[in-house]
Image (spheres, one colour):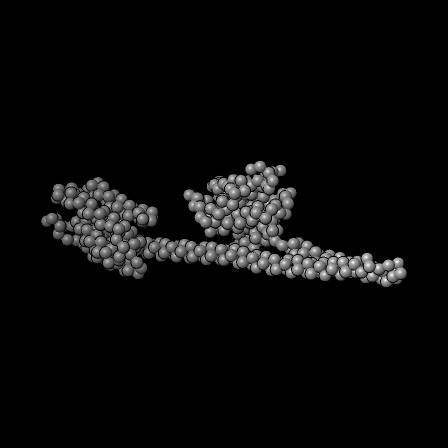
Length: 402
């Protein structure tokens, strides 16, 4: 599919050639020409329009140069008999240079345009045409036409170069956007990996503490049982020994209690430093914003730090997927995340200022998100907004009706 600006250039070139027909028709010089010349001029114009349209369908420069060569011959045949029709000459060379300079690769297009102008100017002298003396362009008109042609070539060459620079800039922006997308996904993958390693480390620490509690309490309880058994065998005559044994039992129980408290304190510290619920979301959004430069606002009211493991998981991955899609597909630079709840449900909305989506494609990320939400009895919505794109979900809280 051709770009719209290429089609516009061809249409302008063809329109100028048609305009030259009306110029000739209104010219007083047409009366001094044979009657068959005007139909021939129309035929040459139609042929030139068809050749000019061919620029849209040819890929290789050699094929385009062939069209330029044929069009140059037609240009000379159309302008040669018309004498001092300066305005028509200007229109014809403009229609010729537009496709040449904007469709041929540099510097070939510039060189070919200069050659065409040189050949065109060489045929502007006086000559015998249809047994009639064709007047040459006056020196002033000749100089004006030459200056106009060179200025037009230079201007179109500058425009063409600028167009190429813009294309390269767009290409580089696309490459940069692709690199940012890869970095964003790599950053998220790294966060998931780091979170997994951290959680695995905490799980191992929990198991170690559980073993410590088991070993400590088991050892202390066994000692207390043995000392209590010894007390049961003592008589009144063993009163001093009984008191001493009870004191040892009390000390053993106190040691066991202190060991248990220490282990539980370590376990509580692990849970305190664990990332789940809002704490995990805050870390996620800050890391995403720092790595991509996207402004992320996390808004929440009076809600608990955590709901339950499954809802925490859904919210985390919905925010993760939503931010990635806003950056990669919507080219957004601002994202607003709002989390709220009523007595029975938790609501989340992720809205950006990106380009939106003409059609919502449900990839693996969104499909998995929808499935998890629906398993909890929730609802998922994705839609375009006046400022960008929004995804939202409404999830029932544990122990409530969906």
